[in-house]
Length: 256
Image (cartoon, rainbow, N blue to C red; front, side, top):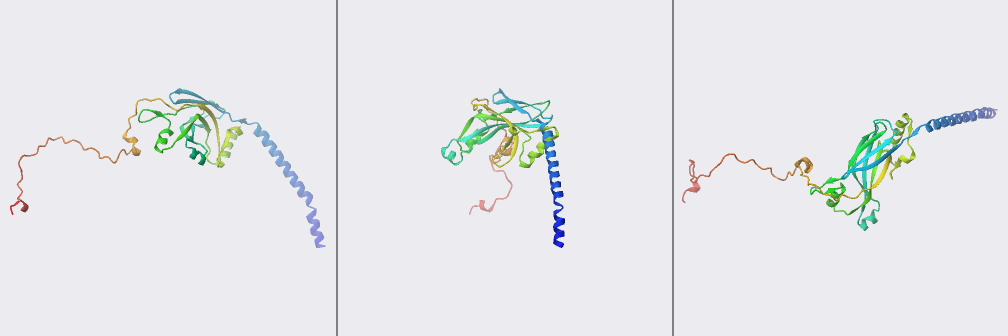
């Protein structure tokens, strides 16, 4: 009799449990549909850029966006470099890259702009990109790409768990990120950016050599192995012709 009671009480609640599960699934389905409907009403983040040369090695980068004012955008220029050594290419076929310049821009009225100087002046007056002097110092043979990639990144994300935070901030503004703006690295880190590729030749112009200040040598310490020069004596001193002293003669000065 006890077993029958246990069976009765355990089975008569099955329809109630099944109904609760169906009710929960229905509520969840309605919630998801409402969330999808609400999310579909959000506008996609629009981020575009244009690149125009201004002077020798200087490029103006401007863009339009529907992001709110005061949003920070980091603009950079990158040139990819491959090893010119066939043996090195076999060991590591993936190219490396050099960041030629970067700058932060701020959105105001749906627009933003920045100016990047891609060239530096070597001590001999030759215009160079930042990687070229390092190549000679490290005794490397690098083959640069013909194009430079100009990037505009929205709040660069350095960790995977930071992208949902950025998306939540955008949802508060009724904006959402489209898949074409989200990139994922080989390590799984995600970031948001747009890019523009443009052919830019290597610099071959020269200018006046730049004088190197001591503050630019040895981390601002200058050439510390050099002894600083002593100031010139303001007095004119002459060596006397005769010995002038009243000290007694030393023992070594007497005849033996």
